[in-house]
Length: 295
Image (cartoon, rainbow, N blue to C red; front, side, top):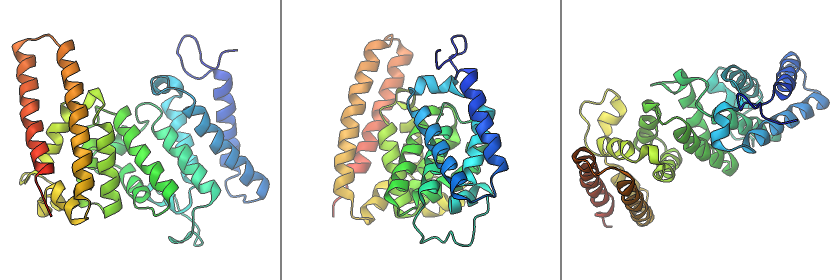
């Protein structure tokens, strides 16, 4: 029997029924902390994560229905300890900030990330301006646990990859390069560097970066408006300028290769050439802005 339904290319109803049945059972057992139930929760989280990760990003677009993904995400958020607070879940007093993340909490976070990035976001409003998912991402990016921090970076990259039409998401990532704590800003910058090669962002991401890289007096977000600090200057303050220069030059080389290939594919109409020429001009300014500082 095929794992995917032949007509819809979604997960076969047999597997969907099993997953939904397990979800309902575990929702009713939510208050029980006996070892047997805890083990079932752990295995269920790992099963969902590994199942989603076994499919390509393209297949994930139709793998699970949005309602099921939302329900599973909410269930796992309740198991993630203090990391569920930004999503409205309460955690026990034992979940102090300094306490290491438990195995179940980490598995729940990994499953949540997999569900969130399994195709377009199941809750687009959560990624709207001031959406409920951003404080959660902030908390993950601010974690000093290497596994959680790496998971957060991967989640941001996949969210950008799977939701190219949600403008506030890209705006938020760029914003946090300015306004976030050092680890948050670094994670967002590296996510942007990773997503640079995505074709769907080839023109949009450059214009957004330039718009935020210079003074932006019309910005409604007071924190960005008050700082007015170009990204390279802030990164310079963190004594990572040389690393940023090298990374930027590598990104530039890759982007130029991508744009040359794109030009070959495009019809050489005046509109297309004008668009490419404008992009190259902006891109040139972006390179200068990032590489012209010295200690």
